[in-house]
Length: 251
Image (cartoon, rainbow, N blue to C red; front, side, top):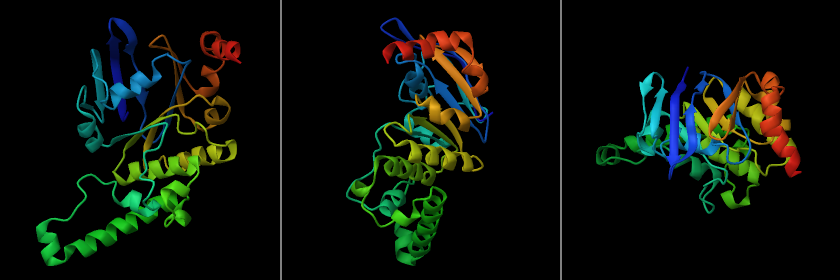
């Protein structure tokens, strides 16, 4: 397993936003977290990525205890969080956005004097184009970020995460607001990327996402209430009652 949580809990003013949550992400997989609004999904990934501190429990990444490390420390280890709203620099091109993503990017005085910065920059550009090609947006390399569609911006956000050396991508609703054709294309690309990076995804659009995931967890009231293969989980009577039942009442 690349990631495991052990009885992870988070409280806000005594309220159990997350309670004894146990999940595991296998290396080279897409793992899905689903559940109704307020079920604890975003709290869970916020604790994993360091944006919230755990009140109880442990988080292990590649066998190492990373509980309550800062977001910066966790990012350096290879857990990269992406958000519902992409944070690209809109006035820069796609390529420029990817090139500025690596941690510690910049030339030392020695590299500037000796000219080694030329080789370094060339290698960065080559790496960036390989990532853009993998995500099938290399043809947009010279487009300004503000010209991209919502789905393309989310792929750019993924490219930036890959450029940072992501081992595990923690994604909050990556296909929210994306048209169904592009959303399915994005998930197909993620499936092709599993040899390079593992995925932990929170997503509501079950009609699109379920066929692409390897394992799923269902949350309600801050707790994991079911887990297993997507096709099995979605038929679990408790899941139907707690998750799909709520969804049906809202529609």
